[in-house]
Image (cartoon, rainbow, N blue to C red; front, side, top):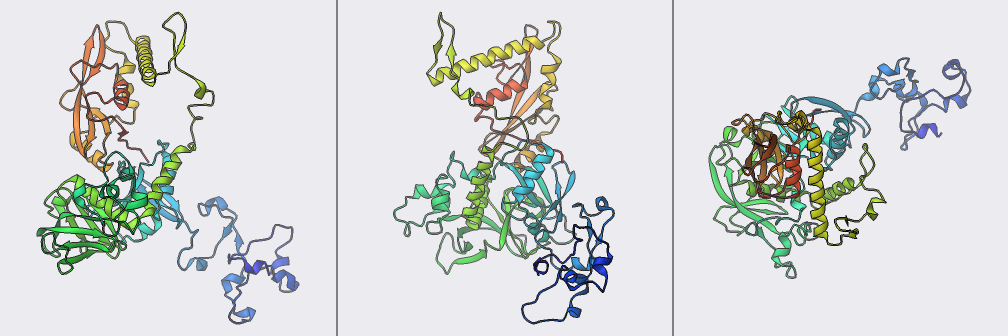
Length: 527
């Protein structure tokens, strides 16, 4: 009876010699029939003739397995057995678009998460592996988009779309995904947080809003503060926007009908956290008439298509909108969000699937900095002196390399130094200023996000576009010539670089004239 206890309802031929007559003949011994799968019901005994016919018939071996399903199954399954809800291992087709509009179809099981799908796409596109890659749910007809959390099921999200709706998944960078867990700024402005000090008298107000404590304090239901602030609300069924004071709590989102009063008589329930998702509105003024460009939307799960049922909101600036979206994610997912961040950080410490061995070996850790400028060598123990010596050696190496590849003095620059930047992922060619701001806005307005592009006004110049304090600034890079050699500068020749790669690498280590260092480069991969 071991064969009858298996879950599969398909019978496969045994791996032993014997003709089909030994299995299908009606006069075979009883022990042969017991090898066939049977449905065992615990409630009552049923005669063998009442069993489903599909389960009592053997499957037909497929003579062309390579032409069957993508899994190359050697058994042809009956169409009648495919009815019913999909099982956990049933593959589903998921279409993912790149930022260039190219689509790629992938097979995913019901339990495939957004992080697993992103890792598959990173391997196939040979992109640099980091936790900033994300899967974005985009509803083009509603101008709504949101970044899927790492633990969300891709098939489950796709099944919630209305049939025929203009919805899709987009694979792209999102540097702001886990920025709320970084320790370089406050999680929320102090004016947006109303701490529950009555229930947590031992916890200071500053401890509740520090980004280093969300796993212990902010995400703890017993010490969860209340996020508050003014937002513009679009009235249901009308195009009129009004300004109300909102409060986000564990129980949901509320707004006050009387100023900033939190009296229960004045608080109106607005949205539930568990049965909704929050989306960015990309074309708020055009489609919904938002007062500003910083709109977002709370979309209940029951709303599958159309704008009816959407709860539209609008903030005064990008910082306020980012804080509200981050608060909604924290309140909805809790510690799961922080676990996703920890797992993403742990994956970065692991060796990649492909690529060379780690850059540093065991013997490299034993190396020390030496100074051979005097009669005898000495070990450099001062860390600042070690850094300055390393930079000097790097500059000397670059001068030798540039001189090696340089052409005679009659030529202004070598072809290599003039075009090598085109191979870099941060260079985007002749992209316009407007497209640059849209691209950087989609990939996250985080300090240090940058790209380099060709200047539209100066045909020989380039532009460094950098995000700082959620604003995008553009710096002109001009070529300059000295003694027949070409250099690039952003400060009228005070600091000169042999090529754009040297300029970018310098500002990744030093701020220079920029408001912050270059941290993340915008890039687009082809699917």
